[in-house]
Image (cartoon, rainbow, N blue to C red):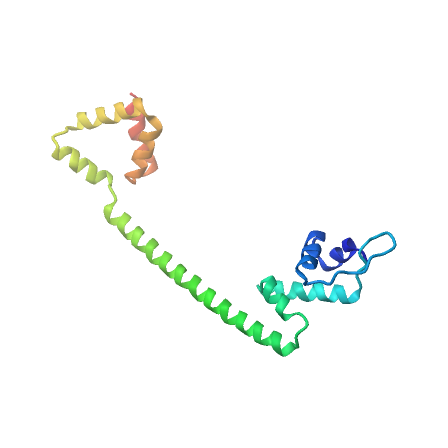
Length: 172
């Protein structure tokens, strides 16, 4: 069969087969009278075996070392790969736990450091601002930067209906 036919049969690209051939994973096949590569059933079986090894995460150099060895040698390499995968999974689980801790900590910090409407009003009153001063603040904010005013009010965790009232009064 041609390189294209072998590629289709094995579910790989033509360039993959040529790469395998250049690395010595696949033998250089004889040529037909038309100078086409002529692969046989053994070649198809070898490409499929390479695919099995690739699917378990082995690199091409490890696969090269395995091809042509007895199954017992392959089992030892696969056992090592299994140990590597276990270590990778444990590392990823460690990353997962660390991210969860950071997210929990971040959420806790946000909850305690959150500026609320009540805190802001208290600060503004402590600074000597009256209700009229605060209304003027919102009017000027709404006039100068309406989108940012909306975002600021949302940041204060004010309910949507109250935000609508504040913004409506600010436009008057």
